[in-house]
Length: 238
Image (spheres, helix red, strand yellow):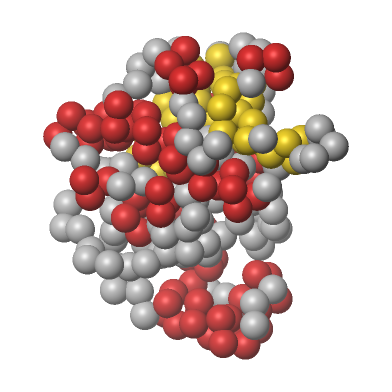
């Protein structure tokens, strides 16, 4: 079983790590990273649609790269990752995280918990130097997951699209809010929070049985049997 998450644009380069396992595909990552570091400030501004202060900061980050790498679940600091309390995990919980937790990335393809990564900015939604990043990574990513009995999808559509055509079982997790008229709506910030909370709960409880996910109930969300099926677990907050 693997549990997939999206990365976040918010990142914090705290204490670098001294040892890490090999990257998913170092050659491909280095190819993309070289293209990023070769971009000028105007090119960065246009590609990522950044303001004047942010485009220079990103340019400076790439140009001042000292080769330090960081633990991914500590480096990402977006909404979902704020709910993942890896610092408090015991040895068993950390082993579970390393065995099951995966972050999908446009720069790294697949990121496991003990891989050392650098801060970066890259999305799948735009081509890089004419390269379609889905096509660039998809075959390798599908091969990575081919022997898994199930994939729990806590990633956004942009990143889980990399598993399009995945032949084995994948369970997509949905968090929706019921409006006064009875209709359901996905509230983006709330859904991100809940993805992080579910990921954290799975690690803390070392969940191996997907049926146990149906008992997850936090922040007013509860499993909605009538809206769910084998491939989609829907949680609703009324």
